[in-house]
Image (tube, rainbow, N blue to C red; front, side, top):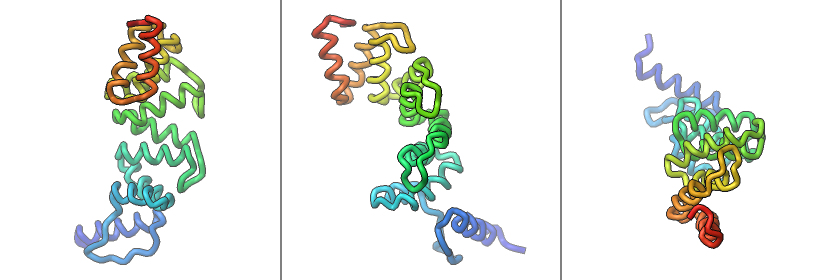
Length: 187
C-alpha cells in the first residue's frame, strides 16, 4: 500500500506528463510549476510552457490563470486562436470577480466577437469591472453613457466615469473629460 506522500508524488508526475511537461523523475524536490512560473514563461516568450502551466492552474480554479489562458486563446499564444475557449475562460474568471476578465468580456460583447453583439451585456460587464476599479472599464462604460449605447444616455454619469478613470491616469478618459468640459456636457 502506498503512503499518502507517495500517492501525491505519483499524481503530480501523471499531471506533469499529461500536461506535456516531459519526462519527470520522482524526487522530493519535484513540484508542479507555480502561477509565477507561468508568468516567467510568458516573459521569456515560452508560450507553450506558459499555456501548459496556466491550463493546470485554470482548471484548478485560479481566476488569474483563467484570465491569462483566455488571453492566450484570443491571441493564439501557445495554442491555436480560439475565441470560444477565450470567452469560456474569461467568463470563469469574471464570475470570480476578476475585473480584467470582466473588462475583456465587455469588449467582446461590444464588438460582437464570438458572442452576439450586445451593448447591454457589454455595459453590465464593464460596470462590474468599473466598480472594482478597472480604469479601462470605467472609460468604456463612460463612453456608453455618453453615447447611450446599451444604457440610457447620461452625460453626468459619463463625466463621473471618465473622471474616475482619469484620476487613475487613463489618458483617453482625461481627453474625453476635457472635451466634456469644453462642450459643457455633464459637467
